[in-house]
Image 1 (spheres, one colour):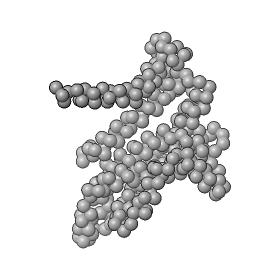
Image 2 (cartoon, rainbow, N blue to C red):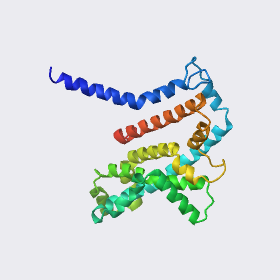
Image 3 (cartoon, rainbow, N blue to C red):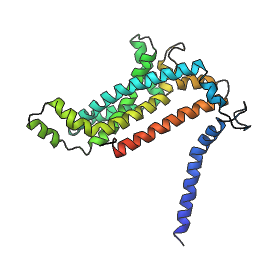
Image 4 (tube, one colour):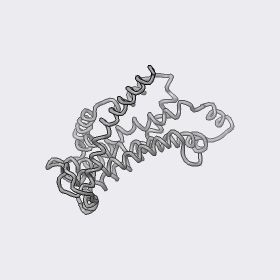
Length: 263
């Protein structure tokens, strides 16, 4: 009887924490289907706000820019982050300074990193646009991809690589047949995480996009819309972004935990 009371208390605390975290999201999701124009007063079920989203050229343009930035930055971060993880793991016993510096973008506040990147591009007199956003996203996504791949490398037996080399296999063959298949689930999981972070990222994109609307991304478009008040259309757009992010993160965790299908 005495053990049931602490257990009930813990369950109540857990339920309160989950309610605090997810109740606002649930309200946002519900109000995105609100028929009326008032974003906080329910007046009936409707999907018209989702329909209006796909008729808005500014939102479509911003979504297209976001997709371009996310795909290109994810590919670059996946390649560079994987190579970086292998190099850091090989040199792990020779010093930890490099390892510490790699994960600095994960620790530095976004506003500080955004100002640093803006100053760097200004110093080089680079005209800012989608290309500077892509480079900026690669900078902070590298650390996340590297950390996921390194977690996979922790249990990797490097003697297999040495045995492959002793048997005369070229380094590219060793990478293709041994290293890449082992790392692929982590690379995919890290890439999905990087893609999600790139889609959701606002501060760095805001500072490095430059002037004009040609390089505006979806989070920047949402920010420009809420300055005039929250509407059901913004609720619908936020719901779509949130749903895509949750799905990608769920797939990322599934891939990293269970491996790719067929492996």
